[in-house]
Image (tube, rainbow, N blue to C red; front, side, top):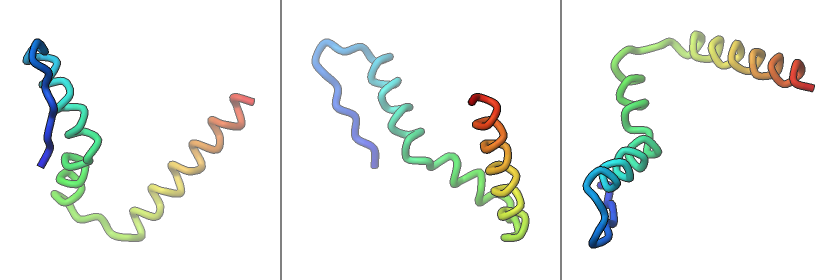
Length: 63
């Protein structure tokens, strides 16, 4: 359960913004989307390797 502390004179928009930020940090939506479709472990590993190589290439071009 997410608890958002709201000050007395704080607007509803700010409280909602805080809630959305906390909700996003928990990763609930990301996990829900992952559970909607099963991906084989071999495909997950392949995606991780592709992502890692991309990050490495980006770091080498920055230097």
